[in-house]
Length: 478
Ligand SMILES: [Cu+2]
Image (cartoon, rainbow, N blue to C red; front, side, top):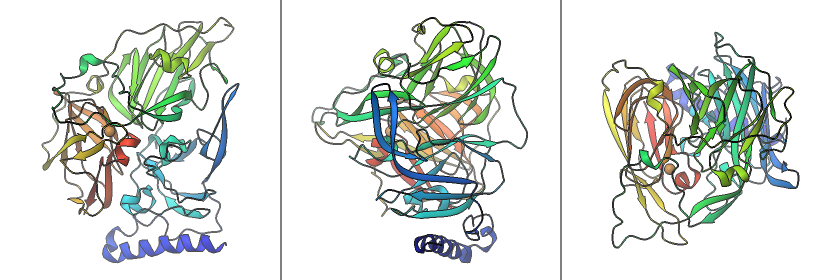
């Protein structure tokens, strides 16, 4: 055993021992790393290291990734079956590996604010985690890069995690994992236009003494599974097949739409959780870190582009070719009709229980001015570790009232829990279980959460620039 192996596992054990002393009853379920045998073979091994990604014939990206590839390897785990995880950090900076969408103890969740175990620079970390719940999850770095656009979620540190359910679900002929990501980020003062302006409430007039909007992020290259449109293998299908697409928006900052001309998507799960009412849609929308499982019936032979409706972004790579057998024509794109994504069409009309408590969360923005960073506030406050966490009681039902008083869309994420959407833009709903919800400018969403596990729980906007500059809040579940 290397000395630093010993140090990292000793640090983990110490952390767990101290939490065990306080709460002996929860010790067993919350002790993923306490008794990990260092000799046993790991179920998952991640190596964080520099990687070169050929995203086009003539274009290579230099970034950080998992196991020398972007996306990292597909990780398949079984719900409720403990897995030993080995993480090797071959970089000179400490790293955090976050298991997004899983209900796991704080020490392995991979968030600094939750005091999770850190993967030391040029070091190693080993722990055990029990995957839950089943469905499409993912793993990504949780480092806060601030103004350094080479690190955090701007890098290639992301990989699919699929947690196999205890009972199998759904019939399909092919299962395809697709992750979107953008490259070569740069600072710009141009504001991103929203695709479906019709869903936005009228903007209040700007205040007289307000500074102009601060930095936004633009990108030069766009990829699906690390390749620009037309580079790399197409998705090969046969007429009559039912193809299950498991889509992930692995962007640092972009919310995206995707369409496949001549075909419709049957949405079967959002953020890995089956929806009460699967529905057919023409255009998918994915906020940063959102996942969609969609079945496409291949009944329109030809060669098509699955891509973003934004022409510039598609020309710069955001798409992948879908090719029917024995079809060799040029890939076709047809612009889809404008489309407003509506989470509630997948929900049902069940009366949801009244919450034990409601928690208003007002999103605010302080413009940074040209050459400055906008600051983001929750209930008027920028995140600061010095504030005491907001205490929640395990097992109680809380209603989070997201009130977006900014002109930006925010894909907000709650760690170590899933929530149930109960009201979206004024429409009541139920049964849609998610861990990220995209709250558009000047809109309101309500979501209920019943915390399942004790410990610190981070809430934040998943837009990297927003979470880096204030848009975070810490809960503590007792
Ligand atoms: Cu945000």
